[in-house]
Image: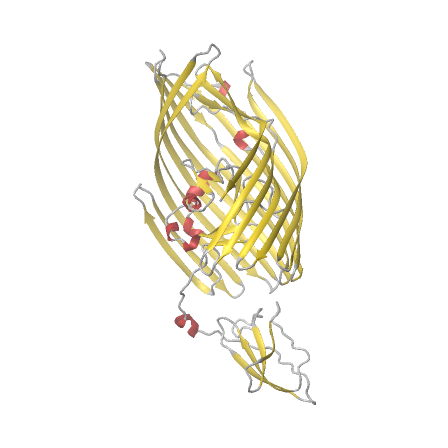
Length: 615
């Protein structure tokens, strides 16, 4: 037991020596209750040596005789070794990358480039991950990737992904897990896999904190502060920071349209723009260790920020009598996010526990966008307001039990209930003529979704062979409700509902070869559900030459994913080579057609695809 707190200490090293000998007679570590028990010890005189990191070593003499064949030592109190704090010198650091059977972990806190950066910039430095100028993330050139924070979606969607990651400070991230082929234990969402951002959670005893500030040559700056507390049965952390960033963009697009009469129409688009954004990100969390086997945790995250963007597109029609035109866009978006969770963990024994958790996420985006279209002497103005609100609830239970050193079972349940509401209104002739609402661009889109899932996985080891097999079942029910003006200029609501059940198997095999070589082979089935802008029939008019809208009748994509990995370890180096293959059915692809000079685009399940590659 700890001499100061009277807490029971688990995994303490206990060794029994014969008097005058340095050879261990018996040795073990204390269990979850701090207890140890040596059986069948012969009569004689012994020295019991007890050691634990951070505590002073203790030696207890023990004598077993014919009259006293047993020795009950009662409570043994260990004292912290305060000298260690001033004498120990750290000369190494955690590995930058760690391989496991179903994921790769990259330790961001070891990278000095993380200071003052955002989560988007940290992700762009991870192999296999790309982040474009808009802040959209892709894994192995596939944007159908699921992004989590601490193992949960935390309100991150395709629509707000860029804004959240731009405001999340990289210095608060401990590691990034890249799960290219998730097992049945994980959500089946995302055909490319899962990226899990693990936030820092210190466990050093005492309390400590820090502040940081920084800037860059593009005019961005940041400041943050944090404090961590670990006292007796309580572990807590609090952090807050502000980050401002700015950026410039430019691009060129050439579009050639082959018309029915055999002629061609060419449109050149040149764009340039600038943007900026800033926001506050705060975290508060704690864990109370009720007993040695029971822990209760609470966490709360908050984000409040904005993003401004100015963009100018010039349209030129070479070899045509059409005159050039311009479209100027000025927009501002305010984003608010709050995320909270509660979890309870009961530990039956080492590698045998039950975890119950619940969470709530709420996101709110508001703001307006102003468009100016210049065609010769004619100038048209538009104002568009499109607030978005999204909330979700999750309930989850996970159980694991390692029956022996070579066999483990995991099982669990997860329920998710989410709702999304987006309302769009557009006005013409702003500031120049009497304003009038453009009913053809009015849209109120409501999306509700329920996903119920259960899973079981079995894993084990035999000699040099490791294996894991799992099965996950998911029932999905979603509905959409779209309200807009019909041809009679009256409001009309269209409703759509779908539900389906799917099974998602997974299998992993790993074989250790001599001289630090290892081979891994795995297979999973994945799903990519259509959501958000893909389902919303609202027309995006930010680029008048390229107008897009969603399709509420889309079906999910299904992917069969396989990987073959080779790993070679030397003393100070490691080589990893991966060959991956993904076959997807019902791929959601863009379908486009010309309407005058505008290219109208939507999405549909029109094809199958195969992706393969090597890393």
